[in-house]
View (cartoon, rainbow over the protein chains, first blue to last red):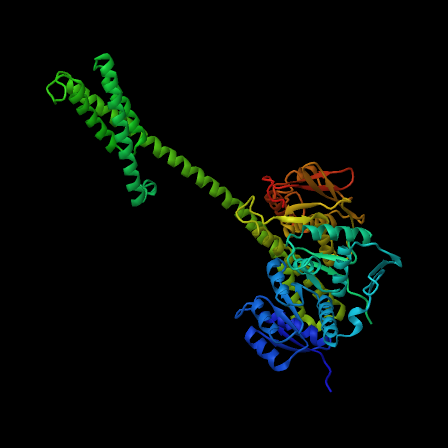
Length: 236
Length: 372
């Protein structure tokens, strides 16, 4: 039985498609490529891949539309490929159901890391196993979701309710970027003010508690204009 | 002649203007007549009545466009003086002694004033036009300079990429593995540099139409600094940077992507051009009305004659090999553009060892209204 993980890559630039397909194949993934959204969607509906890599700037259809269409019937992880200055589009893509994004240009190692993270999260969701309740561990930081306990190098970190909510949300989605809006509605509720000043203040406090130097964060990274990403936890 | 046509207002404008001119003429004539009546009533002397009309005439010629209204007003004036204020009252008598003199005098005054006014208006328009052309030419010159500098800077790495690619393809059979790897590595380095340059240029396009048009939002200074350092370290993994931010959280209005670009440019320059293995220091200071970002290197320093023009984007001519500092000028001039668009300042100081680049951003928007 062929157990290769299958990936559909939708990208209109021939050269980028070529090098990405080569990298992915070399890493042992089964790759089908599509130059347009239409071809891509038909590939997805017929093949039900494990993961989708989607370029936002496609000639025949808006990338956001593609995500919406796929999300109407499948929860296959989608990683969006985009240029650096398109923050608005990235946020829109994430809020419409994309799992993560990767900024052009990227190296093979970065691409592999994003793919692994996305696959891991989708596995967790599908099996709905206790993994979701497993503690988060990365380097010296540990978050125990059952005991609501955060420790750094063995000693307990005292976080406020709000701070703990933010850290645990990021830890449960470690490795993935979480948008400001998602954090705010998860922590303060759906009717919260979408002013993210209060989130910045809390994040600054968290950083001062868990990072050695808040200006050189080790655990929680900022994706400017988009959200936060927590260091991926050391699984397996 | 063409320039003259340029100033001709459109038909609609013209109509509107004519209406306005007619109104002004009418009002001033009525005013002059009213004042004359008043004066005449009090002093029973018609000698100065003509003067009042002349005053109205001068004003009309000055305010309205062209000669038409002046001539019209002078005719009315003459008739009014004749009809209302000279014997026999309320009757026209053109045989009055000196009458032609009054008429010709008033007409002449009206014509001369109109001519002078028209001339003056034309000259003012010409001056404004010349000024506009000058500003335009200045802008064009800057654009051309930037374009020339960019093209020069882009050509070098492109030549090297094409060269490396071609030699790999054409003579690849004669190269050993390590030589091939070296060629590919060179292609990677140069394309990375090119990408950085393009991103710099793209960031300038985010500033639309110069100052005060940046898309500002409240951003946390430490997040922007840390993001810049992380992105730079991704490209230059060996870079040693010592980062320090104030203890309290600082939120200031800015376009974070642009400020990040400024920090990256300054840090990269410091790393690549200081020729020192000592870590670069990047720290933030809080001042009364502004936040100051410092990027300090402990390298070879910059000659004083260079430091004065370092943000101007002009290639450094004193350098024996211009390619050794490729892109430095453009990167810094882009920094200046970005900081200026935030109403901040940027400067470079020579220190006993190395150089300190600092830029400041205002703590609040000038209107003070952006705070929630």
